[in-house]
Structures are given as structure tokens and as C-alpha cells.
Length: 155
Image 1 (tube, rainbow, N blue to C red):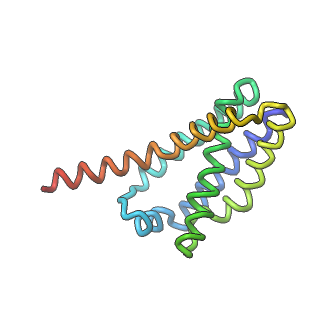
Image 2: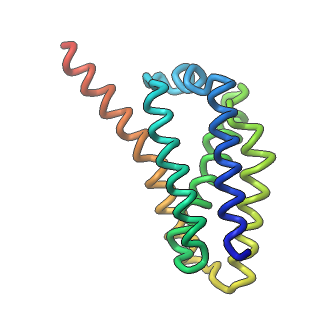
């Protein structure tokens, strides 16, 4: 039962992906960022996220630094990419509903469990959130590289 927050977060992430797909996150992201996202890239990136979620769920508190990178990924994605962007842009972000209803409560629960286990320290939090931020920014960085490369090839 210790790993239950990770398993529930993995299921929540599948719901989040479904929300983004049905509500056309791709179009929203292209209009918001001016990057050219393809659905195949969306599916590949999110497949990797679900594999990470399953791995974090199996590993759980046996290696919490690894598992909490998945929790941090969901927290950063929900709080910044969806809730924050919706507030700043004043335009609904596909993924906002599951961010508010699923990511915030489940991530909060996971961090409460980590606190109760005595592992939620400042270094632990910084390492896991830093790792999560790297995971989140990796596909975004590849999009920038792809766009730069496409611009160079066209000139």
C-alpha cells in the first residue's frame, strides 16, 4: 500500500493525457508557444511518461528519489504548464481539469506521505523537482532544436 500514491498518479496521468488529446492540446500548444507539435511526438512523449509512472510505482519508496521525480513531473506539469499558463494567458489549457482535480491532490498526498516517512527534506525536494524539471524540459528542448533545424534547412 505504500506505493499507492504512485499508482494512482499513473492512472491520473492517463486521464490527463486523454483530456489533452480530446480537448486538442496540440492546437492550443501551437497557438501558445508557436512550436510545431505533432501528435506522434505527443504520443511518444506521453508513452515515456506512463513508463516512468509504472517504473516509479513499482519502485516506490524503495528508491524515493527516482519515484518522486514522477510526482514532481506531474506537479510541475499541472501547476505551471496548465494552471499557471491558464492564469497568465487567461485562456483555458487542455489538461487544466485533471491538473486541478487529480494532479494537485494526488501529488500533495504523495508529499504528505514522504513527510510522514521523514524523507521530505529540502535536498530531496530540490533533487526530485530538478530531475522532474529536466524530464519535462527535454521534449520541449527537442522541439526548439527541431524548429531551429527546420529554419536552417529552409534557408
